[in-house]
Length: 265
Image 1 (cartoon, helix red, strand yellow):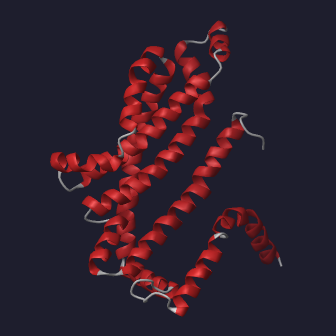
Image 2 (spheres, rainbow, N blue to C red; image 1 turned 90 degrees about the horizontal axis):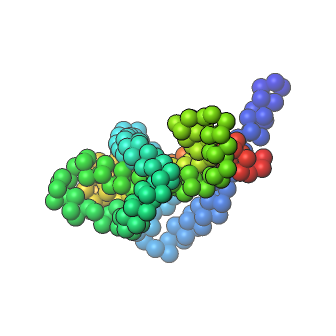
Image 3 (cartoon, one colour; image 1 turned 180 degrees about the horizontal axis):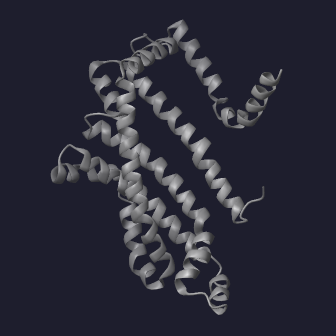
């Protein structure tokens, strides 16, 4: 009885997170029905069970895990570098009117240039390799973090830093204990958006220049005519990001907003 009660409590606690997948049930059923009646040839529209069988086979062989590990590692390295560049630049642009006037037009200009648009010149400079993919991820992640940080800093009411300065706080302490906490909800939102954009940019870069990773697996399957493996890649990408965003990033963003009084509990 105690074990049953513990399982029920676990289900109640985690159901809101698992509920994010509920809208996919009708989609899965529709996919199953269309595949069953074979409106399209199985070679072009594989059955869910065939996708599952092939996915399990690739996972058992270690192919799927190795490709996924490569993709996640590239995203982690590129995103960390993008955040490390975007945060201080965002603080600078947000805190300094001169920096804002000077850099903001440049930021708008380069933000308008899509990450994939850089690939032709990056291939000339760095060739087909990790450097090109890392640059694309850093570039993609940096701008949402930078611009959201700057907007968050400039949205902090001026009365708060002035009050802290009047009470004897140093400039550095005002930034660390007033400005950064006030901008933190925007910063977290920028990180969340940057990681989402970076994930998509990574897959596109792997398709074009990669030699491993989920994107490369999908493109390699296309050349072999295996729609099943392409669908496996799509499902893995969607499920993994849904879990990361719904179970980690969205709660972090919500908790940050609640902590600093921007939203009600």
